[in-house]
Image (cartoon, rainbow, N blue to C red):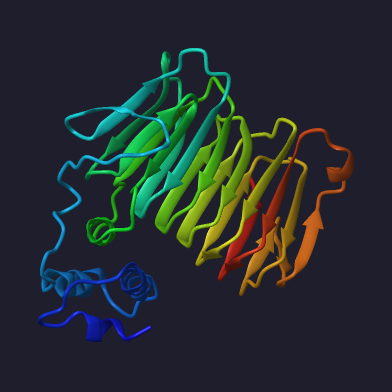
Length: 276
């Protein structure tokens, strides 16, 4: 791929998806600051409108969630017996938690604009429908601060499955009141904190991407198995140090009906699993 700096120059006709992703990668790796990237993008002709402005998008994921001025969204619980949240968007300072939401399946609040939120039955999908310059600029804007930019509250009355397919930084997932049925992550992420409640049944947690820092907090005496298939510079599970390509489990894991299986098949500069 050509150097991204050569692409952003006077007379440039814009960036391809690959070049946008290269710019994003340079910001994530610290080669460019968000401010520097924003200044580079400001020199491009035909720049898309700022993502903070409302836009119309189409999707095959279901119907748009009801959204109100002030960047909030929700969907009715109705007869849903379970929920599924799919996050497929660039995001910074993003919080997922639970609450007693009564008749709502979920509620969301955004400090800045957010991608389209679509509801198909009990499945909620938050995503940009295409990788765009506007999406990248919104992510860069989110990077310039340390306060939550978006918060999803899940109705704790039903069990939930989570899928994370995106580039995120400073993601807090507090599921202390949620019955989790599974979590799948395959997006590059920085500084992720996952807090779990007691498992019901066998609950798989699988992460297959690159994370700079991943911390998982479990309740005391929860049956647990951790497998590290990828590379990690530092792994600590229940106060025990581990190297890459290793595994550990509690003595009762094999026979416990309620347990967590945590599998890291990607790479993490730091993985910590603690009991609380």
